[in-house]
Amino acid sequence: MPDQRNTYTHGHHDSVLRSHRWRTVANSAAYLIPYLKPGRHVLDIGCGPGTITTDVAQRVTPGSVVGIDNDPAPLGEARAEAQRNGVHNISFAVADVYNLDFADGTFDVVHAHQVLQHLADPVAALREMRRVCKDAGVVAARDADYAAMTWYPAHAVLDRWLDLYRRIARSNRAEPDAGRRLLSWARAAGFSEITSSATAWCYATPEERTWWGGLWADRVTSSALATQAVDQHFATPEVLHDMARGWRQWAVQDDGWFAVLHGEVLCQP
Image: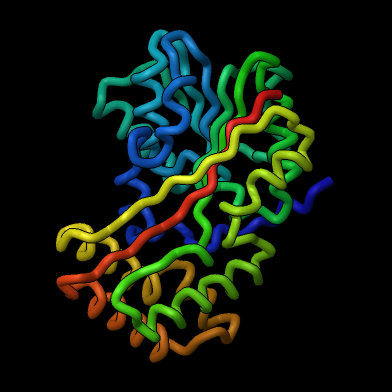
């Protein structure tokens, strides 16, 4: 039985949710679009504030979508997002990805975006996702790969930020470089038909840099990440504020560019 004491490294500070609210099927799950057909029933794991989940529900109408998260904190916002968009074929609940309260073969699509990287046992989670997926359905996962993130211009403070994040995530028994491991995890979970791919987010315009640099500047000083860094003696508040300044300095560079690589898998049960 997997140890269920997973720690969400980011937490649910507004600096985190600002990133989550931006996400849609088009920019975060385009590889899944061919499977989001009208009438499909979908489970969205780690739904957060529900922007991807609501988008999925609109695409599969008259099918249905269940969005789950292991923390109730963002679910009120998720319900409001669905209501604001007039989406009614959707529900949200607190649930445990290791022990899903659904019968075998319930869903046509089981989807997890940026979830497996935060789990102590991603293979066990994939097995449970497989259990609740129909035989003719698909299990889909997409995760960032922190070691593959890259930017320009070079900035020593951002190098230290990346090292800090990876050390904190690993202290939580998570895997920040999950993207490159998805294929391996899916094979270990027993899937034999797996399509593996990769896509990237890229932030290069002044508006994109301001948004991306600003939310990370706030994360390293105000989110659960900052609290863990100080409490576990990975960094002092002074070091974190220096990282925030580094992020803001990068954001105003006219030639600033940042790319986030993601691994993706589509798995047939």
